[in-house]
Image (cartoon, rainbow, N blue to C red):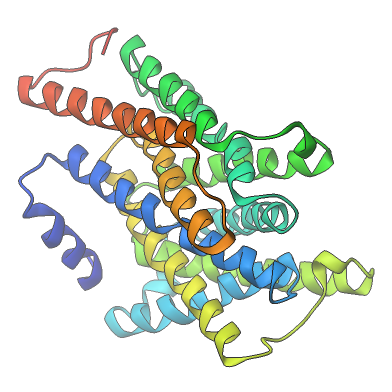
Length: 323
């Protein structure tokens, strides 16, 4: 039986008239446009606010729990204690916290756009894992759209050779950990509700980052320094960061229950569009003509994949090798 929040999400999406797969793709695309706001806040807090990446990560999961736990207790007080796969949800939270820490540490030292450039090996990892372990069928046309979209992402980002030091390994590690996190979303399936999954992973992530903070701070690592928000603005930004994380990832869980991983993976390129806008507005990263060309390529690739899925759904037949 669905929790009220899940029912509301289903009611909202069912009114579009799309197939379940198209609903999942629509939800995923929306989330990918919004999520870079969280990354921009993390960069601002680390660079301008002087807060360590580990501390930002801790607050990101802490305020996620603050947002989702009251909602869960209100609609189903016993759901948290009757989770069917608690350890998988906790592992999901640890993986997500680790991935977030890698990303937030990277954006502290590197331009936001460059971090995204390296991080976007993740959709390839996700597609390969879904094909190998979940049996999702990916034909050559979708593979071509994914590769073309990745090429567009590289045009937008234009990473420089200066970033390929040890720091460049952080987005790669983030991509791998986040791929495992998304894979667990599908592996858990319908065993637990999205709200339970988000709350449990938030609690696990908070506890994990709390322990990591204390250990890192004791060792004198500046990227694990413990601190409190120094202003009302800083506190508000951290609350917003946690809220975006909690609610957007709740929707992402829903998307993965509606559509296969191989179809949703390319939509993560949409983060590039939002990140480019935020980079220009907040960090004076003005998009060059080549970046706009890349954005067009990314959007065109995503629209092609949507079109192929709707075409197949309309024909009511399983995908062939070339689809």
